[in-house]
Image (cartoon, rainbow, N blue to C red; front, side, top):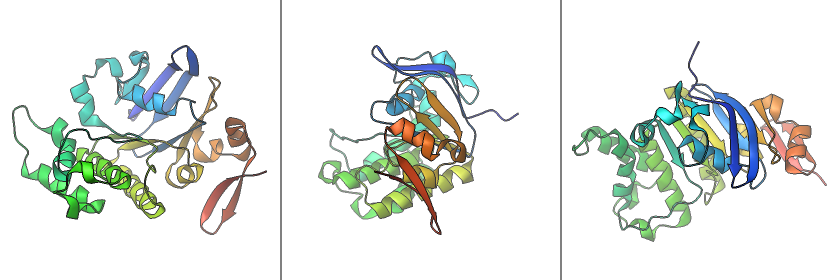
Length: 258
């Protein structure tokens, strides 16, 4: 049997004393794209942080590549897992190119300089997100959208096995939202990696993910293939409003109904 890239067993998520999700059992296989949906404060970001050893959870209940998270060093994890945070703030002065090169840092041998391969991957990533002409610019001079695109380029340069995306559409115009998620979806399929995306955008989740984890905010959750989870009834219960879908030639779309 194929070892999942991510597996949790009866994982408990909480924020302080507040229970977010209890007995979470989920599996993400190579090539799969999981959307994490739910209202504000339901635990979407908390789950992503837990997978990066950034939260207070029982790490023995999380496995990455069949190995308990507690057994991974942060250095090892950085070679396997990459995250796109909701907001990216660069306080230290650095150029766009220097910043994107940080994605290769976990892969460099000890006490070694960047290799030709590392520079090539960084340059390709900048071209992919349309920032190659800003390579010498200081990061502090970038707009919010440009910073988000730079963070995506750094993630592509890192080339992890598991991509974690926390509200990836933040600061991005519609065209770049679609092109970015199309690129990452294709990358996951090609490289047999996996993607977990926390988002408020139900329609982006419907378009780009094949599995869904819906956090109801009361400690319960629904997990499974997208078609089984993203139903009008289940979404309406989780979001506290009437949500319906329509099917067109362009695909399936969800909207709030009043």
